[in-house]
Length: 69
Image 1 (cartoon, rainbow, N blue to C red):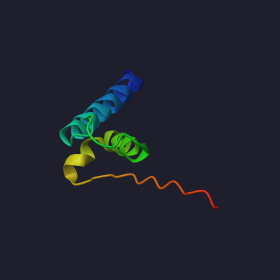
Image 2: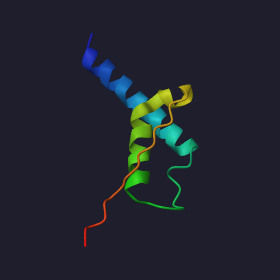
Image 3: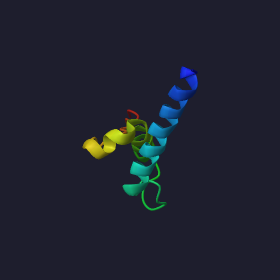
């Protein structure tokens, strides 16, 4: 039996379910800010996979410091 194939299939399914969760939350809409925070939130939501339906709601906050004067 090839465990690599089964493991790859599980990872692929995990990521697909994460993408479905991100879609359900409207993260793929073109509306609004398309910056660092939105991209990061989409990525961590996809990586969280099915945990999204168990209450995980990952968010990324990108604070870029202003240059000193």
